[in-house]
Image (cartoon, rainbow, N blue to C red; front, side, top):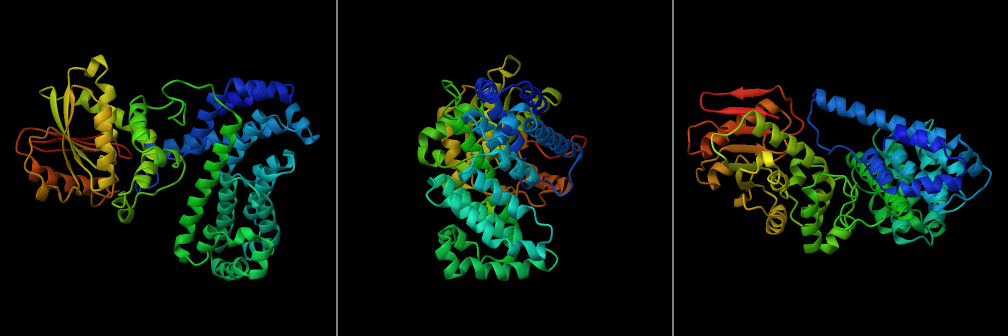
Length: 490
């Protein structure tokens, strides 16, 4: 299903009950559609986007524009007329509207959130939607952020007070997003707004009127450095969109699918190699898996990358990035095997920045295909985050193939590799994320490859040709060739 198809299908529904029946019959397709419309490509994109990234951004923009048109047409349809007349929406229709709120919140379509709010019955959901519009529709930043303080906090508090814990957390995130939006540096206005709102958020009289302002999460945002506010705003925005998505999904149940339903948020519409890896980690770390959702941003920077040493952070990375990375990694693997080939079918791979085992899971899936079933892969993992080593061990124990073997694992960056690893007879150096901070000069493909050339020369025992593949966010036409080497970017 696409948003254009959804638009056409919704226009054909004569009543809210008919619409609810249609939505219930297509629950899984809707979940997958809005999941793809909300989730972003991973943070940490290269400094200069190449043509494929530009095209991907254009596709996402087009999808969101079509989603916006689908919403507008639905609100102008007979079903929209019924909602405006005061008819309470069936649960499936409420789910559709919440999915649209989630998408609009993440895409910045605040004017459409106002239109949704106008057809919602009074209650927590309407209050949350109205609050978003109030602090995002700001004609004059120097005036309206602070002038609307009472209205925004009163609206948020009415939704927060007595709400379930998940909705309380979302209301707190809405308050955080409001504060960060107003106080973030912007042409000299942010500092003035920040000082005013800090005073009002911390005022005892205001906290007595609106206990939401006393919550630990809201109080913690008041004194963080100004330069961190834009990132805090983005993180809150992602959590808000995620919470709306989860709320909608609870109203629109999907018939259970054995093997996938309890594990895969996309209901099986993702890389086949991901499911056994998810199941293995969910069984090993059930609490962390249950408490980690799918849109919480966790930017990969040099300062934070090697901090993936606790299970919760690793699980968040796994659930956020692996569904995005695995199709890209598979294409890079297949293109390299098909176009470059190897002189023998037993291939030793140095997996640089392998994370929780993305390449391993892809290879485990590919080995079941006839085209690749004669290969035998030995993997040496180079990954500084020790928490990912635990994940790799769990996946390796439960996702197995007789032609796939984990040879060794090193907790270091690529530049440190020559000092800790003895010389190997490696056939293939694979970098699954070309901008990973474990490689110096990440983001500059030419410099990064030159550094990797030095690492390869220092760690390989053979002088015969090997292959270096940089997958994801790279220019496919870029290549370096040497007398004894063949490097390819896929």
